[in-house]
Length: 163
Image (cartoon, rainbow, N blue to C red; front, side, top):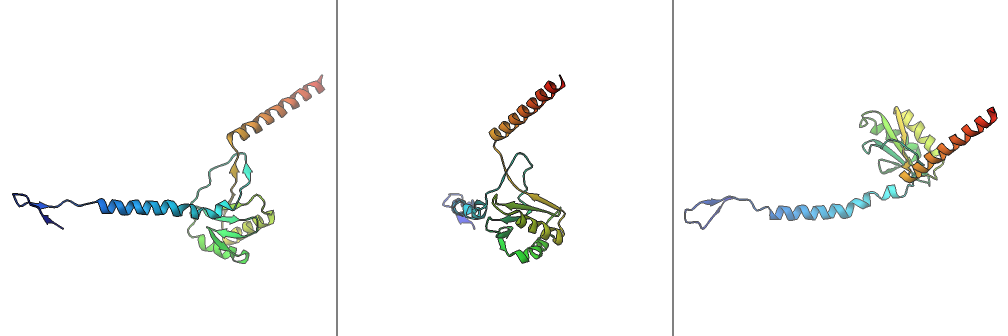
C-alpha cells in the first residue's frame, strides 16, 4: 500500500511499518514461554533411575513413559496396557530406525517394563532403549576412585598370597 508523501517532488512513500509485526511476535513469544513448562508436567512425574554413563537419548524417537502407578504414556498420550501394541504399531511408520525409548520411574516394577518390551517386539520394533538419569560428575569420579581402590586392594591381596 503506497501513501502519498507531502514531499515537494510528489514521490511515493513505500516503506513497510514492521512495529505491529514485532509486537505480535513478542506477544507470541511470551505466550510460548508461559505455556512451555506445562508440556513438561508428564516428565516431572517420572523420576528416572540413575546410571553411570551412557548416550544421549534422541527426543525424536518414539517414547513410552511408565509412572510408578503403572500408567503408560506413548509420546505423552496416556495409553491402556491392552492398547500398547496397537499404539506402538501406529507410530512404527514414523520411526526411522525402528527404535523405542522407555522412560520408567525408578519405582516402576520390572514387569511393567517387560510389558513394553513385549509390546514393542510384537509391533515390529528392533531396538529398545531404557532411559536413565546420568550421575553427576562428582558421583562418577567417586565411583571410579572406589573401583581403583578395590582393584589396588585385590592386587595387594594377590601379591601377599603369592609370597
